[in-house]
Amino acid sequence: MSLRKKLAEFGFESNDDYDYALRCLFEAHLPHLRCLNIVGSSGRRKTALANALGHALEYPHLLYHDFTSAEPPPPPIVLSEDATTAGALEAPLTAFERGISEACAYSEGERTLLILDQLQAADFHDHIRLYHFVQTCEWTSPQGTGVANPQHLLLVLISEEPLYHSLAKVSFRIHADASRGYLDYRPEDFGLDGSAGEFMAALGAVFAAVGCSPTASEYTRILADVHQRVRTEEQLRQSLFGWMENLDRTALHAPPLQPLVAAAAQAINRYLGIEEIEIGS
Image 1: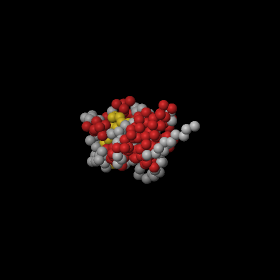
Image 2: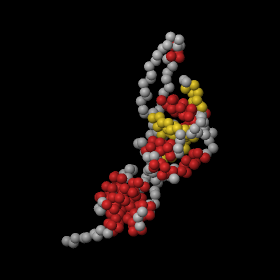
Image 3: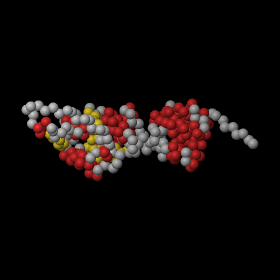
């Protein structure tokens, strides 16, 4: 099964094929931990891609930390009679530190993926510590030093702002966008005969002009509307906007696009055998 289909099974559908990009990352000879920087428009699409990758690539351990999540309250401190003051009042690890420590421990024996999300909210000191960890594979915390296995651990870095320069330089970057890649759909891909070719080509012209292409499942829903409901230009616009996650409504209604929408609606009616009747004055 292709990586694109596997990602779709785990909740991330895209026209882009990330197989080559991952080959670049995993086959590169790197002197540091492998880092994957997922970029894209704001929202949780980047997070969805990271989680889907972890499942699609069958990582036994998938860890996640969001820097915008509030830290849980520290556990109560109980002083025993023989406990030293310094040891008893030692600060607990943050969720970020625990995530790195667990990733190090798991990576000793099995493949591990650690997602660090919303890095723009992290303290700059944590960016520096993270870069040092990537370079040395060692993580030092109040509870000791952990060592990551570079053959097993993959870091996925997600930020709504550009990464700290040093982290960006050691990362391979991919873009999480469902519609940027363009798929040349054909009638046989959806069990249709050659008579569907005209209206599908007309729809393709609309997608090319608007700069957005539906994913396979989105196109399947659009085709269902075409066969059962779409008869007018406005109905076609509503179906396209309703099913395509990244379609910009302003672009869809822009005047230069309207002749293409009209041509697509007419091609659909011809395909369905609906005759246009012009009423003279």
